[in-house]
Image 1 (tube, rainbow, N blue to C red):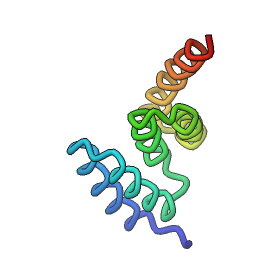
Image 2: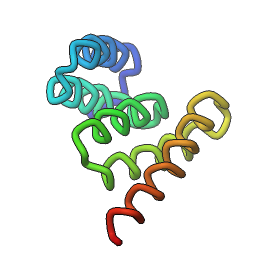
Image 3: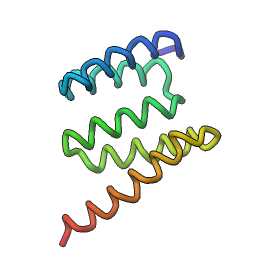
Image 4: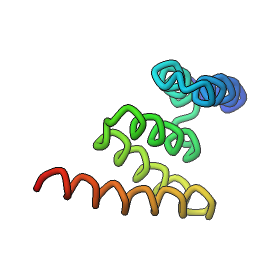
Amino acid sequence: MESNPREAKKFVYYGNIRYLKRDYEGALEYYKKALERDYFDGGIHYNLGLIMEKLQDYEGALRNYLTSMKLSCQTETYYAKSQRKVRNLKLHLKARKK
């Protein structure tokens, strides 16, 4: 699919509404649609990480936070947020293995 950041923002908006309503499955679908339209937006990967964490898909959340960090290295906000999430999830996953 061709990159379309404007259309991606529309899906992020709808995903955010679903997230606020605690409809995490619905939010996940909208964020995935946004990602199809703008893969290189670190914020979308961050949002996917949040949703996957809520749905207890910790490995998926970690992947998305790491991707957000790679794509957001010029954007301090998402980079720092993702970095904290990665650190916390790694500790959580390590504790679960014990």
